Length: 145
Image (cartoon, rainbow, N blue to C red; front, side):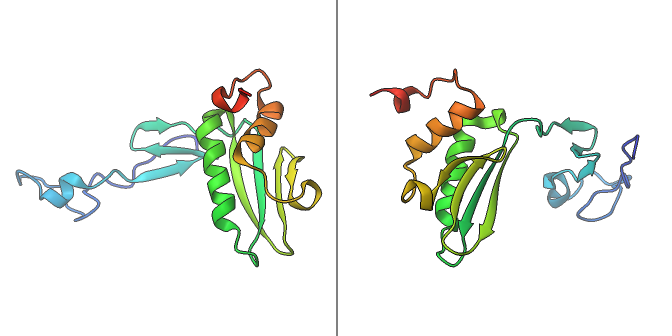
């Protein structure tokens, strides 16, 4: 386990120059983003901690690669992330075969294409995920009848 953050060098990443005595540094050096470092599951950028939530529920979307359902699975993942944000710990896309399209929250089936007869509309999927993740959450227009 690493107990301290070490920055590899104080030189500029694009040119490896410390710019000592040269003013101003080249535009490429000024515009270069900081070098991210990962330690113990958290991502650090120089001395600033970028927190990562891994304690929330894990949503898995298993999709069939033979059927080319990656775009559908990705779109549904995006919709769930836009709706639930940091209340979800992870949304994972799981490639499979044989016509699979299965959505689960922490191992509990939310939607199965074969059992439920096709694909869910996004409102139904959000409602089912909400019922597990945060039953008190109001989904706005999705909950209005």
